[in-house]
Amino acid sequence: MEKQIRKLTLVLAISAAVMTAVTGCGKEANTTEVTARGTANSNEERNESSAGKDTGQEQVESGGAADSSVADPQSSEGLRSLEQVSAKDGETFLNALKQQDTKELSALMAHAENEYTESDMAKVIEGFQLYFDRLEELTLKFEANEQNPEFYVEHYAIVGKKNGETRSIPFIIRYSKSQSMKQIQDDNKREPLYDSPLIGEYPYIIMDAERYIQALQQKDLESLSLHLGYVDYNEETQAAMEQLLNTYEEKLDLSTLKAVSKGYDEQEDQYHFELQDSRGQKHDIRIGGEENRIMDDWAAGSEAG
Image 1 (cartoon, rainbow, N blue to C red):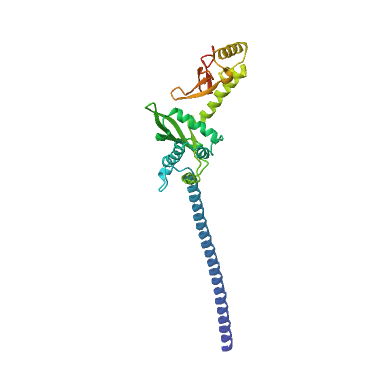
Image 2 (cartoon, rainbow, N blue to C red):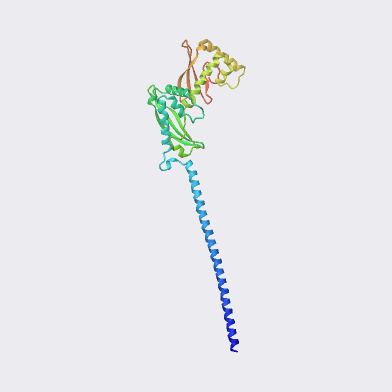
């Protein structure tokens, strides 16, 4: 009996030990699983947080780059305003004009749509000399600024005197928005575009006057009608051009005829020329309007008349 009790006690003890071991393993497994899940969740949250920070940083950098390309330099600390930048460029052009430096002026026009050779800039200088008495006394006056989808535009006036009276002519400096604001701020990298009636028009107006004389000398009636702004070349137009040619042949020596510029009338937006021959005979014409047509008082019935 005593042996049976001892045996039963031993069996119960062994069973209890086994159950304890099994229970311990289960807890350890559960603890390991919970720990693993916790670690995974922590890493996932950390990755999401890090990803969020990276995304936010990229947006700020991208947004900053976009803003800086169109930013108004007046609102950016340490940057010059467009007015200050354009004033520097305007003075550079004006100084070259005062010195009549055709090479420098041609270089300054390097970014223009049309090519401006030294010969072209000599004509520009001639235009300014006719419009003002003394180039060395010219000054630059800021007028206004604006912008459009393609350009920042700074409006100036070049001011001087003619026959003792103060007069001015428009002078515009543009900066393409294809340039970054950083490039526009750089004196060595920006590409200013200069314009004025005496820059963008005058050299070509002289060519128009010379071609008009050439048409007279060659008796090219159709070309004459085009210079004078006739829309249709018909019998009536031909008769008017024949009458014009006869008048010139009667009053001037066409073989020695040349055009002498008399200046630019800003109010009328017209360029005045005097046609002269070797005998000293003269006749005035004007060139102006949207299409820069020739206005000749000898052209009876002319649309330009």
